[in-house]
Image (cartoon, rainbow, N blue to C red; front, side, top):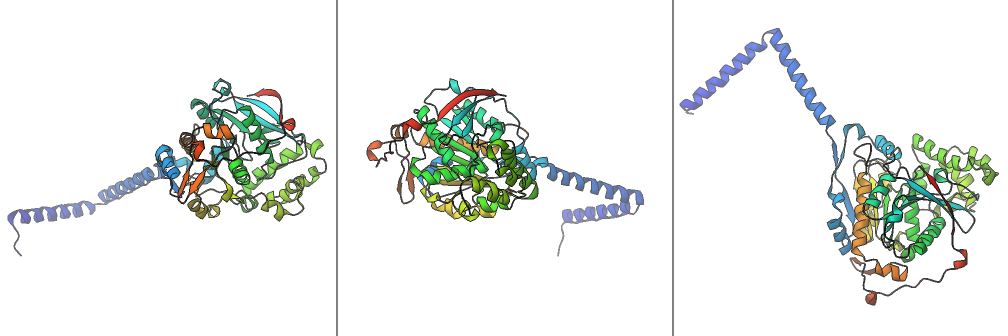
Length: 443
């Protein structure tokens, strides 16, 4: 092998450098400094990787259709990567951020709606909604079991910014509301929500109704959409961190979340002891959500068997009847609603169901910081706007329902009434319409 003059000189230089490096390492001080420098560089590289924001791209699961393509084109948040800071990567930290979300400048006016059975439901209206045109959409927000209007204030502010009205629908006894009847609605009980939506539809006849549910609020929303199908009167629905399988989820909660949920359930009963009477002692003796359901919730609903109660309260029991477009947002590290309960086959089969999954985000967290709109809430608003732009308001205002024509892989919401087989609702007894009590302002 013949080596050129340039190659030989380069080889000699490399050998000389190796010899010099070996000579330097032969001295103890030089060796120590070299090792220390190497260790320092390694630590800096590790810290840089550790402190770097964790990138969480979203994955959309749905059936291919014109509606799906419209969603993909009009929902930019779906393509935006969720970047979690180093201190907020943990799923429990994310869940706490969602639970402890502070007020984002929104204020609410409380209205009490009297239901047919004499019960009261608190509606918290985002202040500023009264200045929006009556024809603008109305956003219904259903908080988690432990939530309130405060946790949803950023979403309310965003709705007002986009020209919508926003109202938070609390469960009976939730968020300090008055309890007048001994009833705690089941997680999938839709009777109260049906009355509220009927009331809002009558008082806001020109407005499209959309809904966003968080946690157990999302479960109630899924149950409602399945039970009432095309007469649900909703143009779009979003469920953030729903359980999909409520019985297994609530009965298998990790201890901290179990105590949190159970304390809220008990508080609704114990703070209204004069209304619930003998159920108070049963509530005090319940040490798990399952036991509370068996002793209190199912009894209030008139069930003798807990299995029958859950069979009628599972969120997806009538999923194939849902006609409104539905978006579900779930995290694969959700400590409350486990990823194994996500029904991927359902989202691949039904053309109006959409699923967004992210590798991290906790339970109803998805937050990149302490305040502002969460990633899931931004995605929800994108979806609502996309659905409102896909179907004009004239169709459902004229008929009171939303009608979808389905052919093979296409779910097409059409605004032309001449091409629709319109559905007519049965007339309702107007003598028993819900009544409202005077509004109460709170901070």
